[in-house]
Length: 86
Image (cartoon, rainbow, N blue to C red):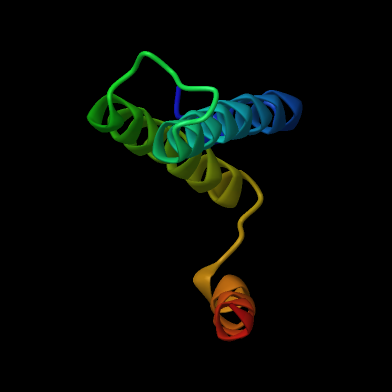
C-alpha cells in the first residue's frame, strides 16, 4: 500500500510523529553545537540523525500532498512568498 492510500488520520499522525522526531534531532544538534547540556553523540552522528529525520518528514509531506491532492501550482506561490520573508 502506498503511504498516500492510508486513512487521513493515520497520515496526519505519522506526519506528527515524524515532525516530533525531527524536532528532537534538531534539539540534539543545537545542544551539541552549543556544548551546554551535551549529548554523548558526535557532531556527525547528530548531523546524520538530522538528515534521516528530514527524509522521514519529506516522505510524510509527500504522502500528505498526494492524499490531499496538493499541487505545486498551489504550493509554489506560497513557498515563494514565505521564502522572501526569511
